[in-house]
Length: 463
Image (cartoon, rainbow, N blue to C red; front, side):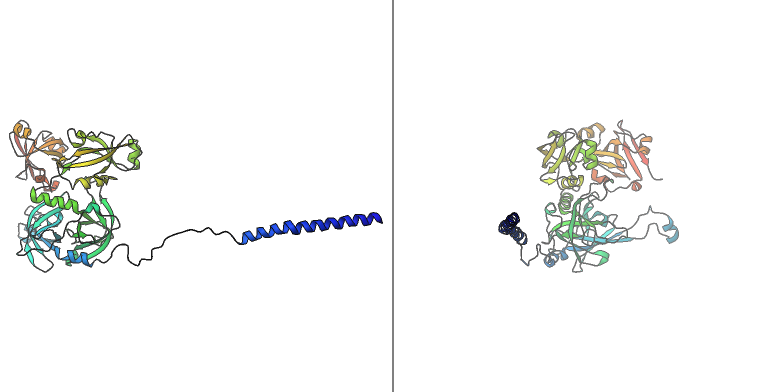
């Protein structure tokens, strides 16, 4: 009996001690843990919000439109196909020439004394050009000059009073996403204004056509008749000449393209001052880099202009550039693709100097390059150059263009080769590169050549 009571007392005492420990320590800690989970610690943070109700960029285009609309004119080009057109005109209509054709476009007055910039394709093959201003006055225009390569032409009208005009802006300073206005005369609807943004810069529409294009791309609506019109920024400054669209239907589908104002202004000044366009040559040959070309040339860079060769004695060669160098900027303009380089150089003249930053073996270097005059071009599958004083003396003529690379098989089979000189095209003397601009192969009827031995030979190309 005593043994049982002793055992029970020990059991009760142990139970009491266990309850005491649980209540005092285990339960308290459990409550603390539960409390921690239910009330998490807050970590403060900070951020900013702009409650300004003013738009990031002004979207009121009325001032820009008012500055531009009276300076954009309607251009009417009256032309005929000429007497060498198919003879059915004479057979059916009893006339020697095809009926007159009328083309229309736009132009931009850029000086109070009546100088107008438009597109070359708007005024080519003209018999007469009529300009109609926004106040319905009409003028006959004179063609001062044109440049098919940039598709820019300059006209002149004479008015009794100073004309409204637009100021040139700096197209290099424009930014992607910037608001712009296109002003022109689509479908003969005078003084039409559309708005959009700059979608891209240095756009080349066809990288394989051999033409150095560097357009400003916008989504401002441009249609037939807008060609030659103004592209302006929100300050009303001219930043481009509307020139082209890409379209399957022939109408606007969301993309339009403009010649940058810096290029148009330079061509405008050259045509007035020199009669032709003065182009500065860097003296490099190569390829714009991308992933494929970077792999081929075994370089890490996928942007920039990779130099494969240089023209000896010209600016880049004299400045120390070498094949394998990668041009990454010119005068602070980043060169990501060929259109960046060709577009910027199109705004420069021979004799000007440019600051070139390039990479060689991974190291960045810098040099100053003097631009030289471009005196060569491709004509009828021949590379031709203007005559040097030494060549003029050697051949005994001040007129003509020197053939430096013959790629025309038909002419080659007729004995014409490198070293010959082109004296005349279609009976007209040629002596400057500008004299052969605008010719299509189908336009060329005859060429008069001068051989190195001094013999002249005329080859008829159309019979």
